[in-house]
Image 1 (cartoon, one colour):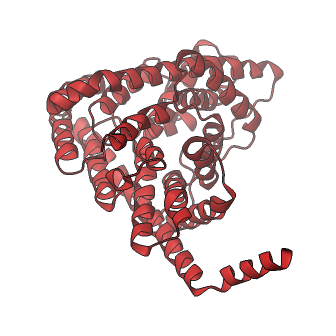
Image 2: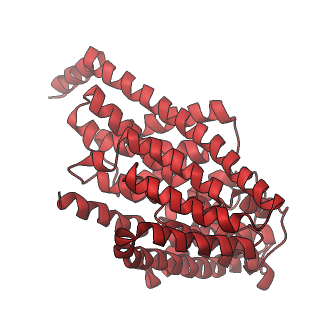
Length: 428
């Protein structure tokens, strides 16, 4: 028995067909890394360009944002259907769909990039990280179709590896990419695809790092808990962050369900009204609620920004309106930014720990409450801030927030949103 197994393993290792599959797959992972790195650079330029326009004429975005979201919504429906929203629900749904090309194709990947960039130019509160998961999964799935990979690669391996590679390349967080796929996308880690996912993440991450350089998404944080009393910050940030995150998720799920029939009948009117809401929130917040939230979150993490008590509410409102408009764009970065604001507020109102500690714990608490993936939440914040000193506190806060979020929103965000695409697939 053992000898037969060894012979099969040796034949698989030396088989030209197997090596062709590996080489094509590895090339695909490199392509995902390059595309996500280029996407990151372009997204930053688009984000900054909007802020330059808003700074030169604060009233101009009141026109640009609503009209921009209407134009993007039209392009989404007419030219790039299937590219709307975060993209993570599409990647999750594709694991079970019969017609995967309806949500995963090179056309959709191209549309996802172009329309997300236009959304940032228009001042929408969206991120590129969720779209990077969609893009990575679409590229790898399309590659599998053209290369005629074996069935198990096609069914799950390519989609999961592409999604993980997208997270790894977007955030420069390879460990979080793997954890996200296990915890959120697949809900399991099958032996036959473990090597596929890992090798894809490594290659995509190294490629993105070669383009962007070695960096930490939110800079480096040296925050740590030195006094026993400061551990009170863990349950405070966990409960408050989880509650707010759960309420946001509940609002997004119910809002999506309520908007769906109206968006089907009058999509441009929905986009216009949502765009007006985003523009007004942006104007009132001096446009701190617009865009990805990356600059605001980084400034809070590194201690370079003052505390604005209303910033988290502004960011939540702008992100919710942007998502309900029907345009492509993710909620990862905006949620992390809102979470940093929650932590800063708690640090100001309940200073039981240093402000830097409260900001990190608020970030992980709110993010865990939104995505309800507690392991991904603390791993991604730890990797993005290069802070291992806070590991236990981040972990505890994340799980407390997860438990709290479930009390107000028992349905997981991405899987609930994925049901709409699964329903469309069954209707075909």
